[in-house]
Image (tube, rainbow, N blue to C red; front, side, top):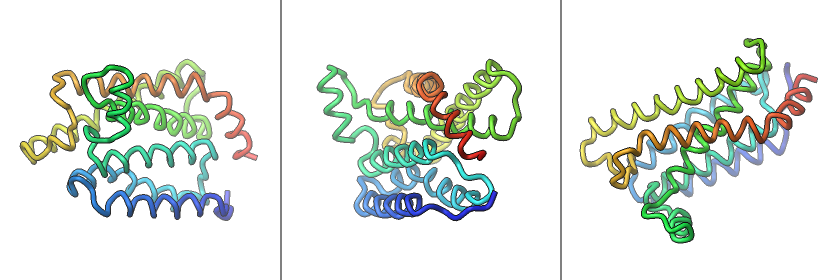
Length: 205
């Protein structure tokens, strides 16, 4: 399938790049910012190069944009210092800034729909139950891989990795991160599968 990139997508890309530059202008910690926004630096070129051959649904592009915003905010402030997280903690009576859990929720929510779209459009899997199972497995594999990257960063950077890890003294931070990704994946499948199906049909033409 060959088609031109719509104006709305180009505008979104331009806005994303502007916001990325703003987030990196004066981050709390330059190294942490770079590590947090690194997925954006990978995803944007990949999405650009694959658009003509495999354009995604509008829903998915919108969710990827939102996920990128979450990563940029977390990178600019570091997850443990995001002001919105302090407001949520105050509202809910939490003892720690929960913004990193929002990030990990979206780390499950968005990749679940990415995997779902690839599986459905590529016709790689037969049966809805197996599809759901493998989507959840994919999300957990991505989440586990990210935790391994955090572990490697901690070993390489020593105490300097604290800002990137954002554990805030929680000994079960890794497990709760993966649980948030799992909840995000399940939520995406329950809430958006029907809308996603309709958009996939439109993309297929």
